[in-house]
Image (cartoon, rainbow, N blue to C red; front, side):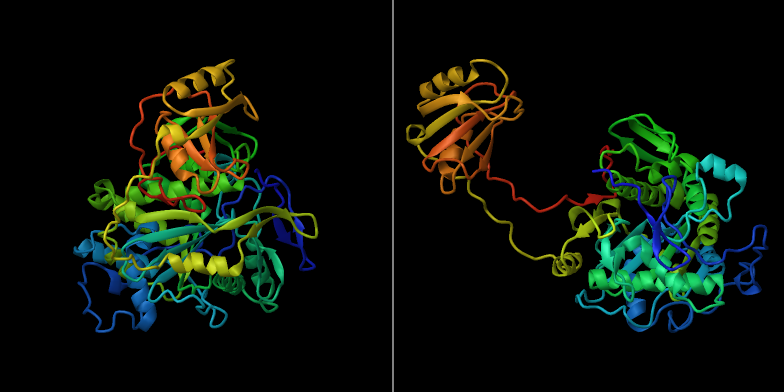
Length: 537
């Protein structure tokens, strides 16, 4: 369902009010940036001609987190470093030098609060980084605004929030997206849309506070909100701005994406793309991840777009084209350091040193479990999430240790003689007389046909065997003689009799085959890995 465009923003009174439809946001909010044209000369201690300084006996004593935080940062490094554009040959002096450059030039903010960010879900030494986009247009020229179809500045609501979760063993990583309209409890402000937490935090800053201090307050309230929602401690914070995203996609030489259908959203995001596989970068990349109009599921499809694009960037970062190109490494570090704002304790050099063994197949992308669309008391569109216990279990499962068990030996489903199976045949294929001919063929195969008729509709595409609880063996026996048929337990089937609903794929009654064991079912959509290149909306 396409979500109504009712994003909220803070009014002078402190209450959130509706904004206009042209707000195509990745996210928002940022600390003060370096002034354009500011000198980027390195301090003497970072000049590669001076030589490498002595190694610290305590790696996190001043440049990074200590104790538990240092351990968490290390296990997350393999994934987050790629996202931060620090694909370095870290075993060389060049890689060490680039890492030091990034550490010296990246923007820092006091994003991790001292309270309200405690674990209720025990995930051991797992690391959690909150990745937030920033859609501020302040640094863009008029020409860049026109090229990006960026419109007016969107204020201070965060519309892209992703939790990067890495378990203690560093064997995998999960990127979990949070829809902007998720209806949540914001500490100190009651219930509201998740994308307003940052704005409330900025409003809570003391009068006369600097822009940097206000942004830090916004980040801290967003961290507290996500921590309460997930039951996890948020260890690190990283914010990427719009211009940096634009430059990053160009530096890596574009990212390959695959669209199931052509799209034309000229009026809003400016996204106009053909169907199929294509490589996008720069302004096109930004339009790709910002589109939500003209998509079947609105903001949910935009979330998938963002996940797919991040996956594509990660694949590029892990490819030889980047890992073995010193020039691209230098460009990436420059783009990353100018566009990133991270918390005070995130050690980028340490992260880069840990990313060498990551693979795209070990990174998956998911969306926080939700119930469905709704409206709040003010009539605004919101998204209802699952209850707190369900959410906490979901995030705890991300760190669950794999069980060392022997592969189960699954026997084929039980069957019975065809003569013991009573069948009601229903024609849902749209082909006249098919129920009668199918009944004749079934009787010839030994089945007992008790009745024929039309199905509830004539547009069934798949032939289905329906059965009552306890009649699995009867259904399995019949399905084995209907090539391509699926089985389903239903409430309206009569015990002892199975229903055969003929679809347009029905191709006759064939020779009985040994049925395979049914595949296990899971709730929700399966995670999409960074290696997945199948088409999306």
